[in-house]
Length: 285
Ligand code: AMP
Ligand code: MN
Ligand code: MN
Ligand code: MN
Image (cartoon, rainbow, N blue to C red; front, side, top):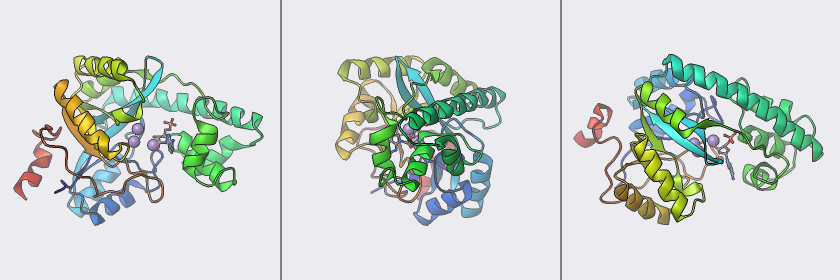
C-alpha cells in the first residue's frame, strides 16, 4: 500500500522540465493527493503551483530544497511548510542566485578549457531566467553531442575532478536551518544516502542536524536504492527523527522515479506529516 504523498520535486523554476502547472497536472494524473514543490534555492514557483493544485483538488505544501556546505561537502536540506513570502528567505535566495550565476561562469570557463565553447550561453538556453544548475549545463552538452544523456555528462564533466566541476561554497547548515525555522517551516535532510558519508560522518551529521532542530530525514526517495529505505528508517528511529518521502521528480526522462510510485515508509517510521492538517484527508480516505 502506498500513500499518495510526494514531498520533493522540481519545476522549471530550478532544474525540472515541467512548469509548476504542468508538474501539478502530472502529479494529479499519477494520483498524488498531497504535493510539495521543492525547487533548488527558489520559492518563485510556489504560488503558481498552489493555484494549480487548488484547481486539481491536490493539497499543496510550500517547499524548497536548500544547497548547503557542511564540512566541505554539499548537502541538500528540504524546507517544508515555509512561508514563500518571508523576506529573509527571499533575500538569502537572491544571494544564492548570484553565487550560482558566478559559479556558472566558472563552470563555463572550465568547459571552455576542455574544448567546449559557449557553455554559459548554452546552459542559459535551458535555464531561462531560473536558477542555473549543473543540470542545465548537462542538457546543453547532450544537445551538443558531448554525451548521450544527462547521467553520462555528469560522470564525464560535472563531478569532482572533471572540467565542469567548481567547488562552490553554499550557505552553512546552521544558516539553512535557521532560515527554514524563521520562515515557519520544518527541516528535512534530503536523500541522506546520496552523500557517501561513512558511518562516523553520517552519525555526526544526524546528531548535528537534530540538535539544530531538524525534524525528519528522507527515507523513501527516488534518490535512494530500495535497500536504503530500511537503513535510513533505522537511523531516523535511532536519532529520534521523523521520516519523509518524495520522488525527487525532475521531469520525463530526467528522474529515477516517476510521481505516484513511492512505496510506503517502512513500519515504525513516524511520518513528517503526522500532525499536519494538510494530511488529514489521507487518514480520512
Ligand atoms: P547543482 O545544484 O547546480 O549542483 O545541481 C545539482 C543537480 O544536478 C541535482 O539536484 C540533480 O538534479 C542533478 N545531478 C546531480 N548529480 C547528478 C548525476 N550524477 N546525474 C544526473 N543528475 C545529477
Ligand atoms: Mn536537481
Ligand atoms: Mn537534492
Ligand atoms: Mn531534489
